[in-house]
Length: 290
Image (cartoon, rainbow, N blue to C red):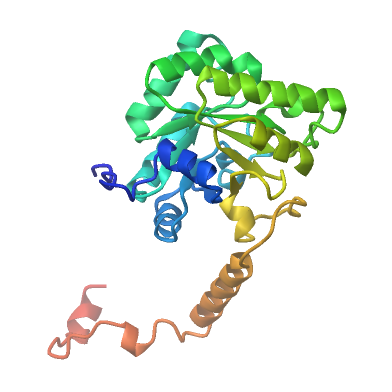
């Protein structure tokens, strides 16, 4: 199956579209997606940016954190999302370990992700320490979305999923990181798990778009994990998550109804069965073959 070609014309979301939204003061939307049907639905709904996040590890594959997901797994799921995406900007996370060894190794992994998945940009975590990687990727014509604040791949170094930037020194460091990432060529910056006031300051400080998750309402765009938005998780939601539907309950009810209908032999009904009125089965002959 060939990859779905992007739409031509102004309707296709590009990094320039996000920048235009920032300059006009228009909020834009981003959402994670890990498969074809979710991508189709999100794209049809007008979501501007779809992220195949390394949250795949937790939301879809059942791991306890994001660290174990591989480049192969990211590409596998990103290819499915690409087939369902026509309008949205498609961004794919670089998983833990794929950009930590050397700039050359980072470039090799990013090129592979773009070539094999159809990604239009990649995302990586970290502040000013990632500027060399971002410059190299930008020079290779690969748009980069940066990610600072609460960075899940740094789970162990941070001592868990903790809000970042709560002290003056930490806030100043994140602001400096944002400026360094912009200067290195990042097209946007995800701000995760930081105080609203700091996110507002960083958003006004940089000229590229910011995308918030747990960073208050004043960033240029917002992103959520689709499973959180739909209540398809098995844990308590974070403070910043607002469920917009209860798909978990709906699915549980549907599965229970299916189970009960099969047990009661009310499914499939006659109307859901195929018929061949002229077919006559010789029951005596069939019995003789046993």
